[in-house]
Image (cartoon, rainbow, N blue to C red; front, side, top):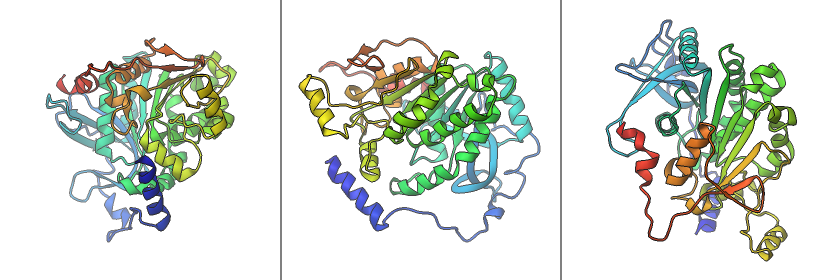
Length: 388
């Protein structure tokens, strides 16, 4: 079934049957004009008891006096705050989302004040393909509440179209946004109050997180780079061979690992989205342990092991968590949907030791599966924050 789906989507991509963007009938400069899009003083969402921080490279539309974040590319990074008022039901889309831009200087000042209350710890989340601001903002809130992270949380929103057949368009936009993201990450890492940045990326967001961190490593001070100690790549839609041979060894260079850096990958062999992505790209993605080499798969099977191939980097800083046996739905968002994965992910965010099963590889672990009659309350565990 998945091969059929992959072939269908690939045919659509190659035939040009994809969702794209048209400029529209209004000059983009007019969409982002006015004080709502460009505040000169602080502005928080009305009634926000606990606003989150947001940075976006999406072009805003403020013509009616409110902020609508479009799927177009922006003329400049903008800073804002958002809040979600929960309804008490364990449903992702429940709760009112309020958002407003803030003046850049005030935004940084408020971030510094909140970070100081948490020993300089900050969490930065970068979403993946097929996301709009509303959905990814709710994911950000879920990550904060699920993990119990006490410090400020920043949601970086790049201009994904948010549609199924917009994959290739999203790829061009995420590539366009690399310079914006890496400049922001460097600025964040260089703040005198920044002590520890937990970077979480999902899916295509790894294509911003990885080059951004490498840029900080190259251009910032050693102390700033040290702040990037806990890196979590969830279902990364990133070329596995490039990671294994090039960027992975750079991220986990000996001096970085010695300074405390650790990188955790959450992968699943049941990830249907990354199976389609592999079909599109031709080579395996980092988040799905597909064996491109059939002879390697045969050797694993001969040893009685699962036919799963992982990146191999000789360092103590790498941890790979295989969630195949706990996959829910497409298997692409287990960290926010599958109970045991949610709990493991929360522990990783907090730099705590989680209970995992060892495998034949010292850096690969799996999680305890569910019994045949066990029906864990996934929503209660993964989305319990909605009732708080």
